[in-house]
Image 1 (spheres, helix red, strand yellow):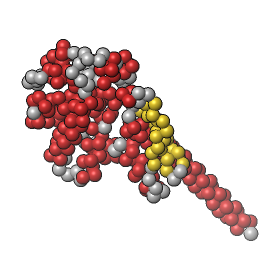
Image 2 (cartoon, one colour; image 1 turned 60 degrees about the vertical axis):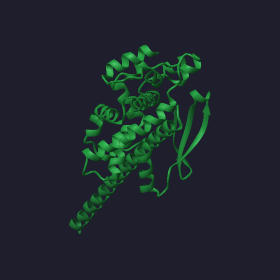
Image 3 (cartoon, helix red, strand yellow; image 1 turned 90 degrees about the horizontal axis):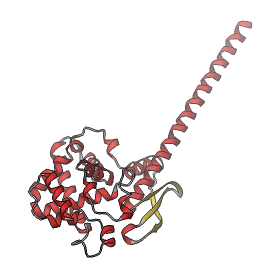
Image 4 (cartoon, helix red, strand yellow; image 1 turned 45 degrees about the vertical axis):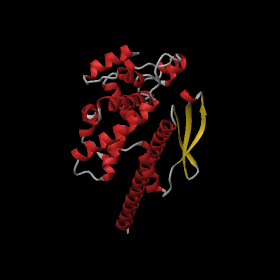
Length: 264
């Protein structure tokens, strides 16, 4: 366990002193369930602390570097960076997955489609860094690691989460709000799988599955956004067809009228 922490500490290049705390940040609860007593503890409490660290560090950096953005755009930028997918990207940037201690069931679940484990581990790492090397060094490291995302000049729409986009779209078109419902949560507490549906006005628009309720809701919202976009495209195509047919009918009637006048 400590060997992995030593390797990661060397890679990060930070003055990390408490290697046992760092090793705990790298220990997923599934590993501890399979190897009871072989580690000081799992990383969930550190994850709780790291969540606050990344939110504050990213918020401060965005506020400073984007002085012309209003609160809504800043919030959208932050949401994209600190989402499960965003944090998993940062974790992959430092190759964090190679240092994690995972149970056999979780080891095969690291990948683009399952960002939650990597995101949680990244937050746990930040919690450990805060306790060991302090706020200033931890903040600077987070900002440096996330610099491409923090400095990106992306259009605001692309920064919004699927849940935000779905809510805005439904409020714009129907005035309603999406409703999320957990259909089932199966598995042990440390390894649950959630299945969630999202509906608007009683109509189910999407379903999602994830290792947390948040991830499942996001997946359901993404599917719903896709469904609504497809409907909008279909409606636009039908409108264009109707307009073309109407134009053709009008032109034909005009031609008939001119022909009739000439004949008269």
